[in-house]
Length: 144
Image (tube, rainbow, N blue to C red):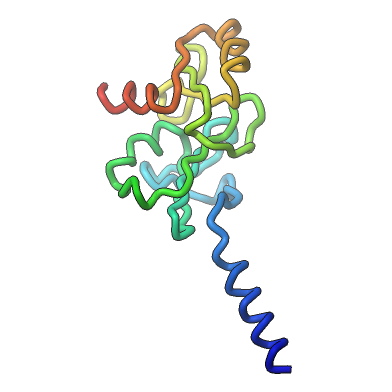
């Protein structure tokens, strides 16, 4: 019996240490950077620390503008939602970003994230604008 209790205690401890994305409660959660209620499912973002603390953002630009508030070595995940598949959170460091006057994001950076360069080009044909990698978009938005 003691072994069984120890096993379940260990299992509970390991399952509570899950360091990964958490669902965003749209219409309820607030942006860590600007405090707006997160409602736009195409532009939301999330930062997860290595310890599992989750910070939600109403837009990728808010997450980027908040980067100085975080120790880069403590960040486990930078996540963004896919413009073409709302609510799909994926790794921002592998995303293709587009800045287009024909895309309205919550903080008016006209920024959207896409899962691939190919999809980025397809959206660029429809919406115009310029494509960026994660590093490039961080540079673009932090040197304005």
